[in-house]
Amino acid sequence: MNTLLIDDDPLALKLLTRQLERLGCVGVQQCERAEEAMTLLKTQSEAIELVFCDLQMPDIDGVECVRHLVDIGYSGSLVLVSGEDGRILKAVAKLAQAHQVHVLGVLHKPIKNGQLSELLASHAARKTVPRRADQGTFEPAELARAIAGDELIVHYQPKVALDSGALFGVESLVRWQHPQAGLVYPDRFITLAEDHGLIDALTLAVLAAALRQSRRWRDAGLDLQVAVNVSMDNLAALDFPESVAQLASEIGVEPSRLVLEVTESRLMKDVRASLDVLTRLRLKGFSLSIDDFGTGYSSLAQLRDIPFDELKLDRSFVHGAAGDASLGAIVEATIAMARQLGMKTVAEGVEDQADLDYLRAQGCDVAQGYFIARPMLSADLLRWRPAWESRRCESAATAA
Ligand SMILES: [Mg+2]
Image 1 (cartoon, protein in one colour):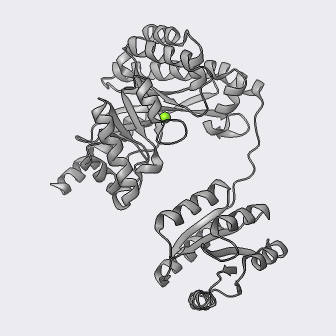
Image 2 (tube, helix red, strand yellow):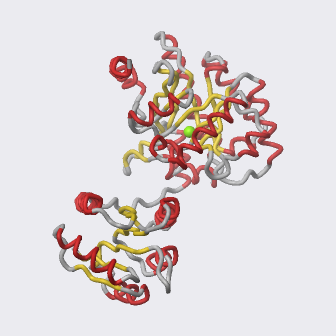
Image 3 (cartoon, rainbow, N blue to C red):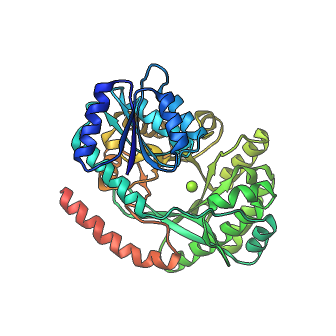
């Protein structure tokens, strides 16, 4: 494996080289100057798989280094090394990821052998996973046909109450069963729908499917609150509340059993229209949830202006919050604020038992995430539920 170390401190270079060689790395190259490193990377950019970069160097800092790696099209992995505060290291890692540079990890000086060998192992594991092929894009006409022709399917991800562990509701998540491309996720077609005037038809199709499913569950004795994601663009149509109310009444679902999750992924085109539409949805008895709270434009200003009754804490704050002081502070303050505003808090991205226990202790109301269940077809939910019931009883017994 070809590895390049960049650090202005010759002693640090020597030390890390020795540690890497002891772990079986051969062909470790060293650079004391970032400029020199970039020249080397330019000429051997294919061969070098792993770059260890110190965050503070006299001629260049870690942020600039990331920018140079992007400029030369570096396709390997990056390890950030620093004696700095963990939050700065994480910020640089985030920045690198935003530029699509793969960050294998961050290391604090002095570097421990255990951490280093873990990183190398994850690098080796990553190499055996084939890269996803370029996925291409879709034509608007193709999506329009899919919406009209039943190619959209809805998966449901369970949400559980944190105090009792009981199944509380589901979030409906749309997928496109494409005849050639297979199962396509919404990150590849929602913007297309928004840009080509297809978002209203798409949202109404998902709403209708989710409401029908909600009715079937209720008829089978399962009373679930069903959430559907709506785009800010849906809220530009002043008759949207009427369309939703009509659908719900035709299918026979009480408005209170439907939650509309709103993400503001782009700036609102018309603030008055969306405020009008959201307020009338609430007046009609539907619940409103502010999705991905804490990211993008989902902000305090929206909490002030819009009568939301649920706040969904973005996954990026949730997983690992129990062991991370910064995340913990954000989670705890958000839960307290939601409670004071009379809103329920739903945590997304719950990935392990520690996340679940922590959120319960903080008084969060509802949890959702892979640790509980992945999104699934409606038929699978009925099979998942008894398995979850026994899992939660076991964990309650252990806790007691
Ligand atoms: Mg959502």
